Length: 536
Image 1 (cartoon, rainbow, N blue to C red):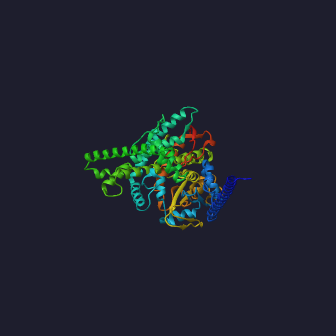
Image 2 (image 1 turned 60 degrees about the vertical axis):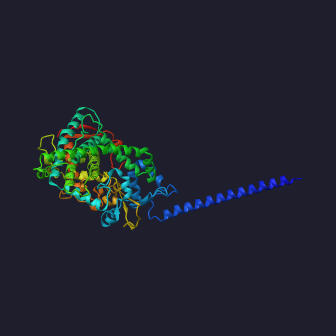
């Protein structure tokens, strides 16, 4: 016989087991429902897209495919954009606001950069991600951008500025670049990183043009200059911010760890360099003003660096937006990005392509010989002289097409819009242009798009062929077209003509030349070359 106590105990246990079973079934049911809802949401998000870039996984979005191919992101993006018709939509991890559109379609570029310019801006998130740039011409919108652009355009258009730049390049090539290359070629069998050489050359060059200060990075002993190293690190950290959700890099910034710690330290070093140059320049101008007050007006027509010119404008318009060390610092940083890294990139890829295409090299040398073969070596051409080098101009355009210094451009919409490709864009959603993919698009450049072909840019009459900026996007497009386009061509031509005429450049290992991961398209392992004296 079962006692009353045993009966109640068994009854309680059975009731508890039954309740537990019901809870398990309920939990599984809820889990199934939630899973189904998540899958339905992911499916709905994907189906609502016109051209999804990848599979939209629950919670993590399309991030896995991006991270899996991050080491070769430029070639990969060119490939999948081509296979998807030129425009795709992407979603990052859910609840991270990491979503938008990527395009290489020239019609979309023209619409965003020109036709509907006012509806597409850099945006607040862009300014956060590019925090080291401050409020310079690259990051600002609306009236601040217009003010920066108008001011810099005024300075660039001064007749004295072009002559000032020519003088600096001449001196730097003659007193630093040529002696260094002579030294390298005399060391038989020695290998030099030509990208590092150009990095140092352009850093010295832009310091002289913007700050009136020569840090002497380019010398035979290859010194480590803290400001130059810090500037490079800041740019690498900015690229990192584009590869992870905003919340990740913001958390790292708050905790002061990882790439964000590196960026903070790098910016501190570079800012100290810039502010010390600004302070020195102010003191110098005060002393000069006290000595030569009578000739102050005539001094303004002399060749001066951009920082001096900006401080003079500040004195003329004391209540303007161009006043204060912060404005000068931001202007200088943006000018460094525009006039240093882009030139380094253009020169490095140009020399790589020329060195690996002997026929192109021989045609460049033939053109130089026809025009200037009578001049004694070594020499540096003037601004007017390099304008005669049409074939070299075509080679530079090809290098910029295949390896654009800025491989990605970014915008966002102010109000909802529909692109000509039919893709919808929304406020705060990222719009990425792949300049790298555009340069390798068969629909833009024809069946021979992958070839390094300077003739593409030369007309039957021997003139330079013009390509619309929304197709050849290396110098931006529309109202934001690069102010220094012509100056950049002049710099690259002067340097390239001088080096190519005097030296043979031989790439050591072509397989080691691959693009890096940064906001500027440089070479991951540098450009290792051997230098020989040319006997023409």
